[in-house]
Image (cartoon, rainbow, N blue to C red; front, side, top):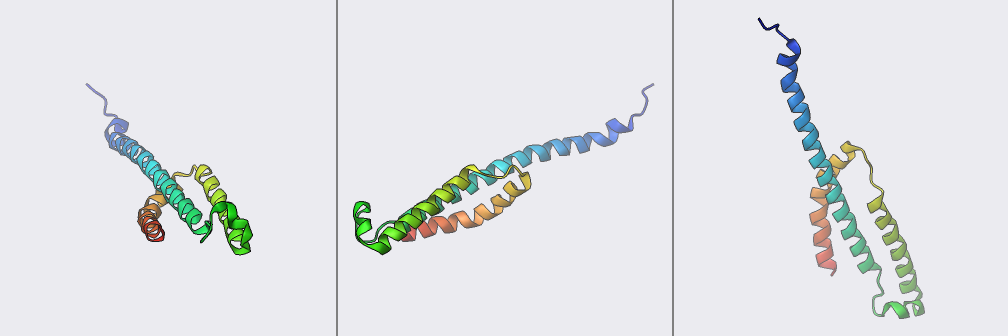
Length: 117
C-alpha cells in the first residue's frame, strides 16, 4: 500500500506554477530591458538631432556661441544617456516596470523623432 504524501499532492501544482512564473518573469525582464534600451537609444538620437547646429556644419559651430553651447550640452547629455544604457538595474521588478513604461514611451519617442527629423 502506498503511503499518502501530502507534499506530492499539494505542492506539485504550486511548484509547477512557480516554475512557469519564473520563466515568464525571465521573459518580462528581457522585454523590459529591450524596451528600455530602445527608448534610451531613441532619446540619444533625438538629443543629438536637436543639439546639432542649426544653420552650419559641426566644424563651424564654434563661430556662433549659442550653437557651440548647444552642441556641447547635447554631447554631454547624449554621453550621459548612452552610459545609462549600460548601467541597468538587476532588479526584476524594475525591469517589469519598463515593460509598461517602454510600451507607452517608446511609440511617443519614435513619433517625436519622426516629427523632428
